[in-house]
Amino acid sequence: MERRTGAHLLLAIVLAIGVGAARAAEPVLVVMDPASGLDRLTREQVINIFLGRFRRLPNAQAAVPIDRSRDEALMTDFYRLLVDKSPAEIRAYWARLVFSGKTEPPQKAHDLDDMIERLANTPGAVAYIRPDELSERLRVVLGLGLGLGPEPGR
Image 1 (cartoon, helix red, strand yellow):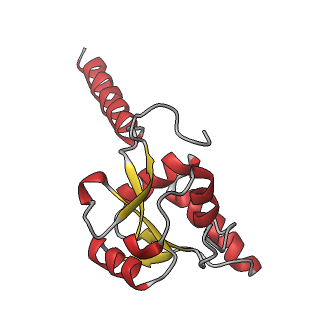
Image 2 (cartoon, rainbow, N blue to C red; image 1 turned 180 degrees about the vertical axis):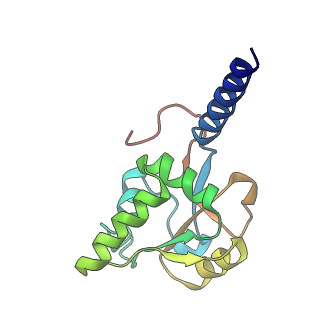
């Protein structure tokens, strides 16, 4: 009986870990500096910007995507909602592109303040945040995972 209880406990732990790993992605906002001149980007445009396919924004400015390198949970949610890929898959994708010399990966911001500063000082910069990080210093150009019906392009 004790052996069976141990097996049940192990099974419960494995299931709990699996459920935690498969948690639903939290909403993410794609943002730019309010002075960017853009009010909205489509999901498809954001995919193309963050995967290095577009080098220019719709207003002809150079597109400069920015990842939050130290916030793995945010990065996981962003790429899961955007292209259904994990950060490891995205890093592998970029390793192939960089090796081929085709394009450069997104810039890395260390934290929210660094990201906001980069957005303010880099024309064409595009980044992502949690909804509770939104401030008047940022303009939302796309929302992901907000539960407002089907997302554009999906």
